[in-house]
Length: 336
Image (tube, rainbow, N blue to C red):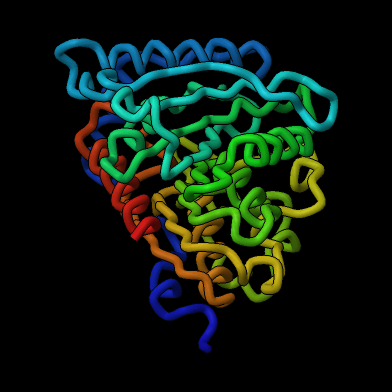
């Protein structure tokens, strides 16, 4: 088999494509509002970011708003599970359709939010989670895992909490789908690789982190180095620069892109959404390359001319809604 797959090789960009005109207009509007707030530390930012997400979701789903329907017919529950490391309570957000609440789910979605492992909570991407709930696929229940964050906790704790979430919440009788956004995609990929064979029905990744190119080319497997091109200046934009770490891999032994063929050949269908104007673009594309080379079914959705997880920044844009709809299409493909 040719490596990389010719379809995926065609998605390699040496420089970022032109930014979509709608995003450039959005940036102009942001500039009119003045400079973004600054924070003394990420610890100061963490609770502010979480509250901002809640306020945005409330506005988006208010009566009369475009996404008001997402607030209807969905039952929300919050609880905790104990960490296997130290017993710490890990927050969990649970969503069920009201019509299905008394029935066991046919599909369990375990969701990992993004935020560079330094910001975000279990409900910080609830808007996207509700889109998944309203996808119309079978009887679905969603759990979002509020793993602990750096720098208070090591990245290994983030990963342990994520794995604990999977072990505690996965379906024993139905289908379990793992979903991850950005650094949550790193958690989702790592969990899928570590999960017992046959326990994951599918994986859905959105602009996932899978590698640590900014720390050095040596952190990209040699055969992938010619194709990992996005950690370069043309892919930098107002939404995301380089994902710089204090120590390589945030101190983890390895990242998902470094898995061997034997470690990934059993993985289920995987759907990956990529934004081309994103320094992390090649992380997801190269991960697709090694999955397909190992015989895993992979489907790519390309958001050409758009920056990293733009749907989380500019929710009101019609293109963001289209990106959410493509996520739902990805879920349906996984469940075919």
